[in-house]
Length: 325
Ligand SMILES: Cc1cc2nc3c(=O)[nH]c(=O)nc-3n(C[C@H](O)[C@H](O)[C@H](O)COP(=O)(O)O)c2cc1C
Image (cartoon, rainbow, N blue to C red):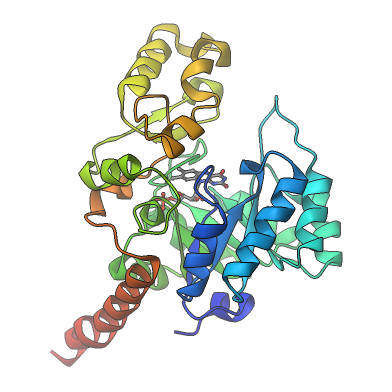
């Protein structure tokens, strides 16, 4: 399949694996890229720019296909040395960066001077237009369904994607709730040039996370995510568990006066315990509503091949069939 996204990034299939904290290691990115999609290493999961440089090298030893690095610009309290992370990306020969969180504007000159293509993840049309204005090559339009941070507007992809298509000139992928060939065909119909998946890629053989995490996704339904940190205007969609129940209770009790200190130990530093050790109630971890569409744990290649086969079948048989009838 050829779209503006496959052409922009030099990939076979219009499928991107979004950056994921403590999931987007070299193994994950290489498996997706080797399967013809675009695999992305999560920059800030590496504690230092030097560690990121090593991770990029490890990934490049596993694939000769294009890979990307995610740079998440965190709100407020934490301030990683972004210029040094960017230097590691440039020196590592990575040509694609997925930015997320705050606007990447301050870092665009450095990225563009190095010939890097930038895809910014946005949860609204206005942020997508800003990304276009500051020179991003593409955007990942992240609907309310998504795992992670859906923003504060709560617009699902059925509305957000066509609204973005009406305004944007640069190409965009649909992100949030994407799982299979049906998602891809729907995304293309709504104006996107491909799709970005997070949660679905965690339930794959190569995802370097504890088996308990994969099984939790297979067991979960579309009813099992919760929104937390809304009072902090840093809303996150997470999988329901004992820790999340506690957070929801605290937020309900304290309302608008909730502070990060009230929930800190349930959200801070919990990813290694969950992703590595499989301690599923250790804290809150990002997960999309799409968990309800995840029923197995294929390899990345099986998953991507199946998506592309299904998309072809849907377009050629089901959709064409309606016209023929
Ligand atoms: C466990 C997990 C961790 C994530 N961590 C990050 C992150 O560090 N930075 C980021 O930009 N997005 C992060 N995301 C969001 C994904 O890149 C992607 O945008 C999102 O998962 C898409 O929605 P979906 O889960 O419905 O596919 C994370 C998502 C998950 C599920």
